[in-house]
Length: 218
Image 1 (cartoon, helix red, strand yellow):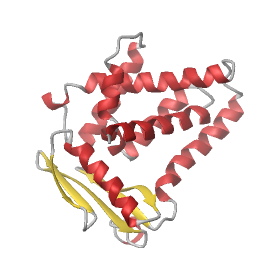
Image 2 (cartoon, helix red, strand yellow):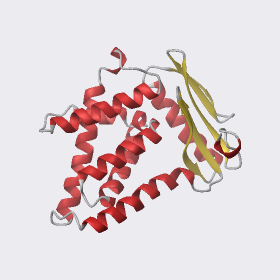
Image 3 (spheres, helix red, strand yellow):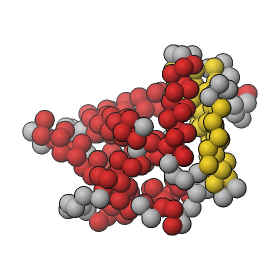
Image 4 (spheres, rainbow, N blue to C red):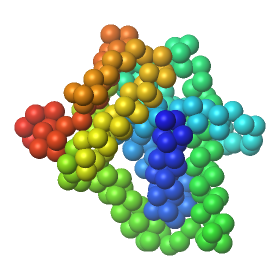
């Protein structure tokens, strides 16, 4: 489950690096925006990121602090806080830095170190952001929705069948459970729920004709 989450995160970062032409600034901006929009992807890759970040290597302190602040922001937004439960927060932050740096290095090796023209970078970054956004909003048969604490319902991903959606829902439930939360799954009903500090985290699979936010997303 964690490896699948890491594979998906790696693919997302690879697309960001390609879209930004290897420029770290836009990559970090898009990564942060994507994580704030779909924070549960972080939980799916939590263990793998922590293992990656536990390795000894040179890292730019400012980048690590940026990643630490971003992870903490996501946890706070979900109402989880940063108590002793999150003592592995720094390895995860370092893992994010290593993941992004590794994909940038791979991109530059393949292209001889160039980053492309500014016009090209701006255009492709824009296309990359649109691609990430449409991955969750494109029309599909079943949609996986997630909600956490103060975060409203967000469409995470679309699936052609209900079975594929509920499998992804189960993986998200496992990711949340690994954080120490008590999870109650209702796979036949296509939903799960978890509670942390009187805050609810929920997920559900719904036909694309149903929007849990109500009419017009409200």
